Length: 224
Length: 163
Ligand code: HEM
Ligand code: FES
Image (tube, rainbow over all chains, first blue to last red; front, side, top):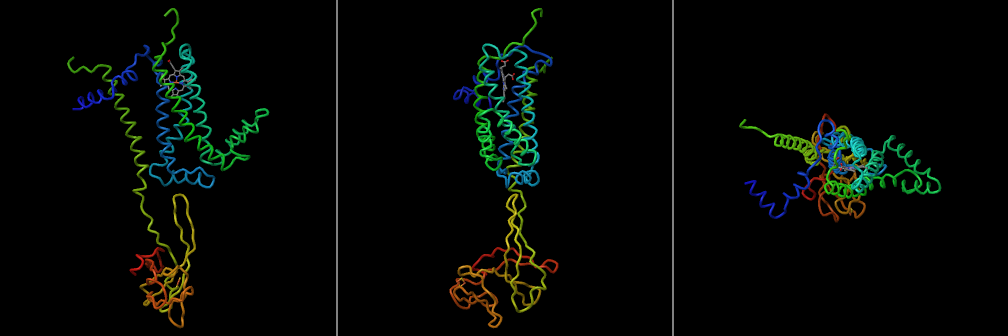
């Protein structure tokens, strides 16, 4: 029954070939703890999926305005069913995402996997890294508590130290002269609209290139 | 061995179960969070207005109270009022303080023993019936109850027009 349905579906969509290309790829021989290093990219992807799901839920109750941001988050924590769990997942997922993506980048670097012909994969990866940093920076402001406010004050002030252009960069980041309502809604728009769109775009490119080139061979010593 | 499970099948099985477990936790959590408004107990909204002793027999009194409406994480406070009367000190009636014509506040005329609306000179009997003037229906009533000698109301008119 199920087999028949799947093969009928395959005739119409060709999903078996797609699955073969995506999941049944040939990958380099690896064993022991080194094999785990190859999972870091997929782990990043899973974390992004968790962030996307929990983020969508949080956005149902969160309001990005100085009057309501803090209270709406407290409402999620205290009154929404599983609210503190969902927020906890998003909070810890954010930290894990940065750590795992950085580890993934390190494994790619130390294995020399960024070399010809995978420069494009690496560049897409660099874009992804910056997008992840952007998520962290913008997301940190959203609770609108003291820590959020002053961390962002420091962050935007650092950006404003750039010679000549600094003050303008600061204003563009803050959406005005001071850190306030405009900054919050600007950061929120980036956090939930701009950055997810960019991330999905670059993940698509990144994964296409990963599949296209195949995973690089584990580097070995000459005498091995 | 007959029932030998290959390494590949075994790992596929592990992956499938782990994915299912993760999917179940995330899916269940998301569903609960998303559907939670449906399970939330409705706040009936009874408001304490004051002691029953503030209303004496025969003469309606207008009592003020603070209405706290919860709207998510916000609480909106509004001052409003209602007319209270009792004939026996046990059963109470509460009238919406707005005239059923165009919403003007009316007052109690102690001499005529009638409610008087100044806007278009309507009069209502003590039980809320229209005595004269343009109002289309008797005064609207609020649900009232007495809890431990305190008056409580829901300042929302019972089905208007049928009071
Ligand atoms: C959201 C962030 C990211 C996701 C979801 C992601 C996902 C993946 C996945 C699933 C793979 C397959 C192989 C593996 O996991 O090792 C991969 C490979 C690769 N990634 Fe990423 N990645 C991300 C960020 C980065 C970053 C920051 C870099 C470096 C700047 C990078 C560079 C590469 C390269 C060069 C490969 C090819 C490795 C090889 O062929 O051996 N990626 N990525
Ligand atoms: S509003 Fe009361 S009579 Fe018109």
